[in-house]
Image (cartoon, rainbow over all chains, first blue to last red; front, side, top):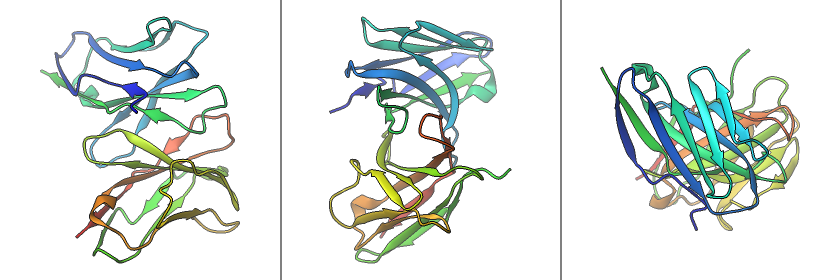
Length: 113
Length: 113
């Protein structure tokens, strides 16, 4: 029962171009969504989040878009930099709060020089 | 301000032994969460604790696994009679209250041989 899905295990993007990572969810009770970045041998680091009352949130090079009707969110990184190479996890939580996150499987992003 | 500290970073146990994983939350954080990441998968919620209380253990296997967060000292995730399938990365996170996003530690990689 995979409630949060990241269907692309990997993505390769040229430096300076836009990286778009996608995430789909099935549980309509989810109302808060987050993106985490993870380097090898480290814990996930929070990147950006969005509440279900919004459809876009922007923070510097990172923008998250939420399409509730499609149960889909995406993370845009522009311009992509070599340091962005990492595994990106999408996560969601239900109305009760952020205590329990449901994670996707992750997408490995590689930025090529 | 030290982050979430987990130890050991790597733990090797033989089948049937006990594994104890420790997590010291960030200063001022009284909420602790444990997640498990199996190879090539996303993080899966295990348990949410506050000082001396288990708030949500819906992700904990019914047998062999237990968690505590005593009044003094770190949170402990205990796995009794480990099996090969317990091999995974175990991440702890902490937050100052139930509504805040949380900070992850670097994880403990458990290998059962």
